[in-house]
Image 1 (cartoon, helix red, strand yellow):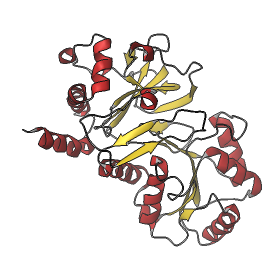
Image 2: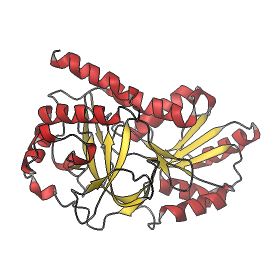
Image 3: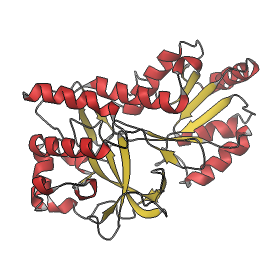
Length: 336
C-alpha cells in the first residue's frame, strides 16, 4: 500500500473508532507519526524510545503541548490548508496548528455535536464569540460558524458586538419556546449575565473558557454559579477544546466532560511526567491531563497538556485548573 493510500485509510478509519479498537488505532497512528513527524520523532529519540517496543497507549510518548508555540508540528510534508492559531496578546507566543485536511476537523466537530446534542437543524445557535470574519484562524470560531449555518435559523449568529440585540433575540426565542444554544467565552457570558439577567427555560448556556486578562479570574464552579443564578438554570454546559486539538469534549453540567470515541484522556503524575495511567476501573485518578486525539492525524495525536484534573472510571474527566509552572518538565529535553 503506498503512503498516500495508507494516509487516506487512516483518516477514514479515525471516526470508526470504538472502545474495542481504540488501542490498535492509536498504536498505528503512533507508528505513522513517529515515522513522518520530524519533531515528534526527535522528541521520542531524545527520550531513548524504541518505537517498535511501544505496545500500550500508556507507553506512548506525549508531546508537551507548548511545542505548538515553538515548532512546526506536522506529520508528512504538506502545505497547510489553514493554520489555526490561539488567541493571545502581542506579548505572548501563540500556538499554531497546521491543518492538512480541513474535512477531518469538520467531520470531528460535526459527529461530536451530533453525538451530544443531535442535529444542529433542531437548534437556534447564538454565539458570544468573535465572528468568522474577525477570527478566521480560530478553530472554535470556525466550528461555531459552521454549526450556526447548519441550523438554518434566522436568529442564529454571532452577537458579541451587539449584546442588546442578543437580549431581545433571547426574549423572542423564549416566547417561541425555541430550543436554543448560547455558546460563548466565559468573560462575555459573565458580562451578559450582569447586564441582562433573565429566566431561560428553553436555552442551554455553554461556556468555552476564556478569562485571561478580561476579568478577575474565577474557578469554573464560581462562573457556573453566577450564570445559573442570572438565568435561573440548574446547570451550565461546557466545551473543552483547544487550538492544538481537532476534537472536543462536552460537559452537560457539574464540569464533568465526556469525549467522542476517537479521543481519550489519560493522567500523568505532576512530579513524573512519564508515569501515565489510563482510567482506573474502581477509583478516580488525579493528576495532569494527557490527551489522545486521533483526529490529529497530520500533527500529533499524543499531547501532554498543562491542565490539572481528574479522570473517572468511565473515562469522563474534569479540569481543576492549570499547572502553576506551565513549562512541562520534559520540554527542555528537546532543543531544535
